[in-house]
Amino acid sequence: MALKILAQQWKDNIIIPVLVRLDIAAKEQSFLSAAAVNILLGTIAVESNFNWVRQTSGGPGRGFFQIEPDTAQDVLDRTKKFELSAWHIIQEFKSTLSVNDALVSDISFQCAIARMKYYLIPVKLPDADNLKGLADYWKVYYQAGGDAGLPASAFVTAYNKYVQA
Image 1 (tube, helix red, strand yellow):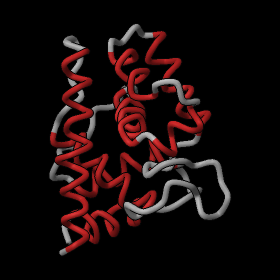
Image 2 (cartoon, helix red, strand yellow; image 1 turned 135 degrees about the vertical axis):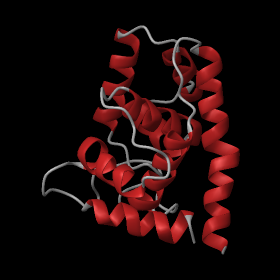
Image 3 (tube, one colour; image 1 turned 30 degrees about the vertical axis):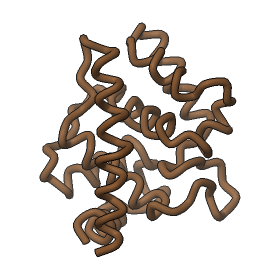
């Protein structure tokens, strides 16, 4: 029960407010959807168990979403290149911190970068209630694809443990 409460806290107090802020700034794009919320919750669950802000193996992943600094910089560069209004909001979240530091210490920045990473993929998110589809999407587009990294089933397991507990 406590795990579900943690996921609900993330959803209500971090994910939805960040996505609403992105939506307000970027009238031409829509970042808030049930599918976006669910894939972000699942991403946190599988990547960090809602616990870790640094990879315990010493790898480059940072924050609850375990985003690598190079990936975050790529997301920022592409967001700016496409002149998406969200870029300015992400910069506000980041403030004066380096990308590396913001990925560890700024939850709103982490959430915005993760959402933009998914948003910039030219394949539509699966339906919000399609857990297997969300897991496959995470595996192919967020995690590593192929045989590297965790399998899509790890997303389903973590989602069921932390979000649907």
